[in-house]
Length: 479
Image (cartoon, rainbow, N blue to C red):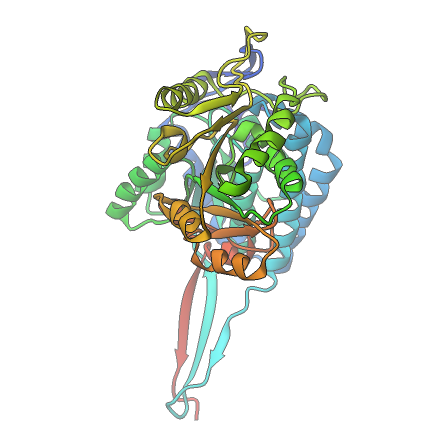
């Protein structure tokens, strides 16, 4: 759609050292294009540009910033087909899902532009005569944004829209597996009138670029979406410079299906939710805990629906489930399923690579039954198109099983009993709980992980306040 190079200080540039990266289509294993692949020098230049632009952007009025974000939102909607196709091709996800990311991105740009106008402070009545205390919220500074490949548009826009609305400037390092989408966002923002240097995109060495973002004092915050392992490394690095972090890490979302639920409705929704983006979703339902009295029925309803799913390239309009992002992820998932089967689980459908695909990193949509908590398919984060099903006896047992994980991002409950729904929602140790729905998060509400699933919030007013500092101004001697 636009230029596919690094975007630094309002200029489209190659890597300072001349490095390149062959971007591979996960559905065909063919090279889509060759992109710049930079290093520390490119990140340093991007931080320089963002730092230079911060003064003017941070002092622009909220209405000026909102106008740019609103124009960007309109441009995304106008270019939706082209944007969605690029995202689909580089990530492998079905075209409708690629476009869906950008629809959400347009909403985020628009909503955070309006949220900038609601960046209210407050006046605090003082106990001291002649004194007035004011609380202000001001932009934190330059923000480093490191994002994952599974939602190359949504992950980036969710953080960037909030940061820009708050008056911050941004250095974005998208995943090298899906960088074109972030470059398309740079084109959109440039065309919307965003000043040079306010948003920068670099592509290259993840460790070196990440170190620059932690080392440079101008970078006051780093936002990261990705693995727990890398999140912990960033925490270690941030401790040396007291750089603020927000981390959106992994998940192992339980689904509690009570026996009174409508099994056909739940089964249909479960298949749609589980196999979206080939299961490569942080909030993807993973561990299906089904009341023992109806667990067999649930399996019988799910299996034919999974067997009917069509594998293919994301840009093929007939595709239901695309490839996994790369060979390493596919091989890892294959090993988890095989190890679980060796330890007693039953593979009801799928379980490995499709026999009719000799190219592409495809993994057949899979259902695993006879699951117990000690199996890898239960306790490891799958991040792939595999549905493990475990039967439980009562709600207390289900809640205990659901909470028995280091992750705490999303959980789901399906029941027609209000008491059971409220009881489970209250006791589940997760930042997001969906009751009788699969899309529990949205632009207006906080996206928050508990335990090792993250630090801080995205989306909603909470996401905006991740990018501002709080200041108390106290004035004495007024009377």
